Length: 272
Image (cartoon, rainbow, N blue to C red):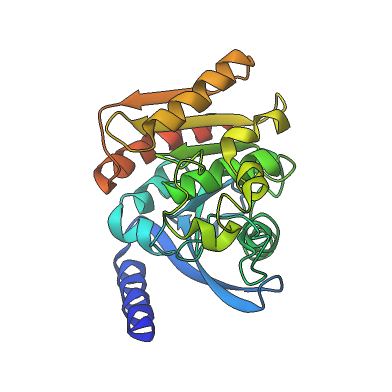
């Protein structure tokens, strides 16, 4: 089943590559030394990018639990157009089905923090004409990827100059039995320290004034209360950020709309 799913995903990618009128879509396979395996990543470049002698900023766009690197382009295909509209490179990593984008302290095969923040960034900068500094990099995502966007942004402010979240699981502690988190951190009662250290809401102390932050979550989302609490903490500590709450649930209708707002934010944040 896994092999058939992979073949189907690659066929979808090929379809979008052939039929993309406003952008180029590539699959960049990166070998992860940290996990000793090849990982596919989708890279969307603006129209005529190859023919221009111009370095562009990069947005790393993360998928949610149960998804893969093709999710964004298949379920929110307008991101191909946005790459051209905003003249940026969009990279959609494969973050594993339920990696949560951190380095698991109990499973050495799950090192997606190292992969995205180090190995993937280095590979993208090597293979594409990028602004290879934090001022030219942003990271965001949906749900599990929203956790990843803020988690990696907060922890690697030397790599990313801007970070965001859409419907993000910014506090994983209220969900001890969901989305395989306990497979990555151990059960909460026996491994409380792992859960505390890897919840975004507990990483605010790492922030400095340079990181640009945007948080977006719908009223009807099961992560809404956690996002509101994170917003309140940032306000209390006088940490600048954009915060959006509006009608919407935890679904692709919401995320396909949210990414437009986030791209405007990141476009303003990039220093070209």
